[in-house]
Amino acid sequence: MTEPARVDARPLFWLVVLAAGGAFALTMGSRQSMGLFVSPLNTATGLGVSAISLAFAFGQLWWGLTQPFAGMLADRVGAGRVLVTGIVLVAIGTFITPYMTTTWGLVLAIGVLAAGGAGMAGPAVLMAAANRMVAPERRGLAAGIVNAGGSFGQFITAPIAAALIVGIGWASALQVLAVLVLLALPAAWVLRGNSLAAAAAAAPAGQKPMGTRAAIRQALGHRSYLLLGAGFFVCGFHVAFLATHLPGVVAACGLPTQWSGWAIAVLGLFNIIGSVAMGWAVGRWRMKSLLSLVYAARAVAVLLFLAAPKTGPVVLVFAAFMGLTFLSTVPPTAGLVARFFGPAHMATLFGLVMLSHQVGGFLGAWLGGRVFEATGSFDWVWYIDVVLAVAAALIHLPIREPLLRPATA
Picture 1 (cartoon, helix red, strand yellow):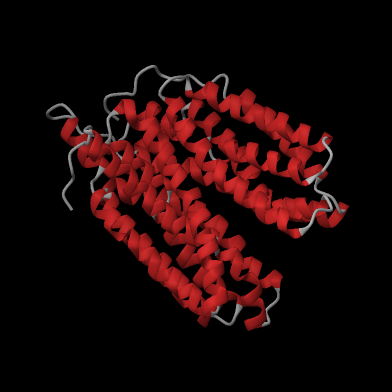
Picture 2 (cartoon, one colour):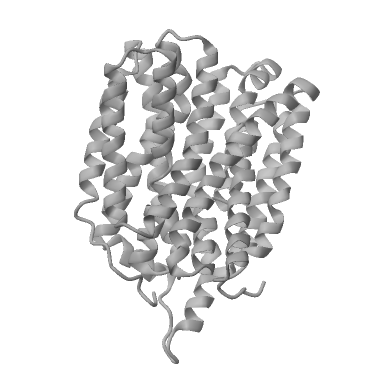
């Protein structure tokens, strides 16, 4: 695939960000709707919820592990090819899931193929492609819109999946979702291109761009990049705990089940608002300050929630605020990676930061269940979350944020 020129004109800007956001909506929407199929899978296979959950837990970790390698491939062979491969893998993994009758079969379909494909067509590749193709002053807004696409996909796909389960059965519903994911394929053509080729074309005559290994070594020796990764670990812990255990938190408050559904919907809806708002803010204020503010706000919100009466409206207000901060960390985090190192290795280096996020996510999801089993309450996980959020707010303060993005890698 040949590389398209950078798009600064308004219509082409929206074509790029809507292609990236739309692809993220379709892959993430399918992935985030899989929880609806746990009970039907358990009934059909008789494997037990614990065994089925293993496939989902492995998928969480594999989604993160896939992204740095997908980023390296995208930087070398082009985002378009990587996106096509990822989208097709998501579709295959989702389509064959009904035929899997063992734990390891489900791990293969859900945890390896579908989650790995979603990682290849995930934020590391999508945001790097958008970052490469739009003007520097519009990259924050682009990252916010792409990030919001994932939440919009969850918001739209989950009720569609639920309706399909009722209308045509869970197995056919999964296969319809698999076909719907393929609608993301045209985005690969829009986002085609190679960051390293772009860097080579922009480099002075006779100067060879930095290689991937050298870029990774440089990043791992960059103090601000390491601090950024540590903060994103905390984000992963917080996000995965909420995504996995928010229904349990609502139930522990003694509220009816319908409040859990409303809380999840409000969380997703306000995440769209928060992501776009943060994308707008990135172009106007220091990104490290915005990150510190978000993490500090999370800590305050959790403390207020713990102290408040656990009524339905309180839960919805809490879900709305958590939604505003849920993934609003992604645009400034991606923006700082680009500011540190430029666009040449953006997919690779942001993929490594995403890996840190998913390791935190694995711990947040796992520890939430372990603590609840041991104590009958989520309180101690909330206390840990508050301490980590305060630490993340402080960690970002010493980050040295360049005023200008480096011209070359």
